[in-house]
Length: 139
Image (cartoon, rainbow, N blue to C red):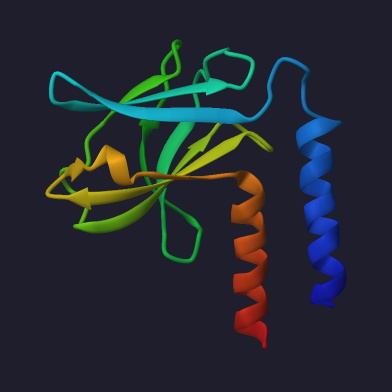
């Protein structure tokens, strides 16, 4: 059953991201930088438009939505406070709506992020990873 489900889910995601998506919005591209000691997230669609109102959250270990950190402003920016986050690697999701998400893996140490170690995941790899995880749990 999973062998049939995986290709259908992948095809659905591709169609949603290309055929059914509005022409103005494409893949989300996010960046992190420090400004006056504060960690700033900047997020834009691939055409340069800011991702206004995108929900920014941490993901739980199983990939489900976790702690919401806020929403991007009209310029696609959000100041992140990670002071309460436990040291280690966390997954951050920028959710601009169905088919419009970005994923970042952040190494957090005492509320700070080493920007040289941030990993950006393309949506397709995240989707494939979720399918692999589901399969492993059911085997």
